[in-house]
Image 1 (tube, rainbow, N blue to C red):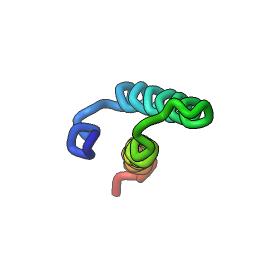
Image 2 (cartoon, rainbow, N blue to C red; image 1 turned 60 degrees about the horizontal axis):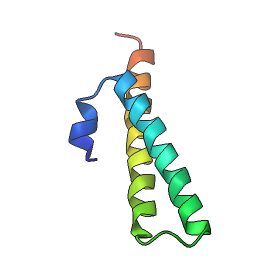
Image 3 (cartoon, rainbow, N blue to C red; image 1 turned 180 degrees about the vertical axis):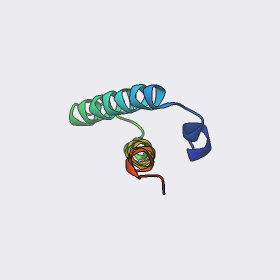
Image 4 (cartoon, helix red, strand yellow; image 1 turned 30 degrees about the horizontal axis):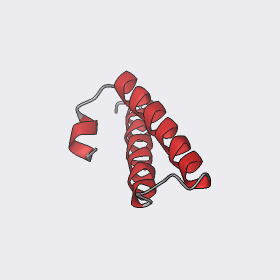
Length: 69
């Protein structure tokens, strides 16, 4: 996922994407522990996706908290 695609989503969709990414990371860790993971670079990609989603959610939260002057 890239940032442009994520910015087009609303908060509900972002929360769903965050849940899916966390589940994928869990599954990757499980596969790694059982020696079934072929592409270990996917860890990095999923972690970055999670960070992007959290950043966007936090940005939107801060905008909502800022009083209009």
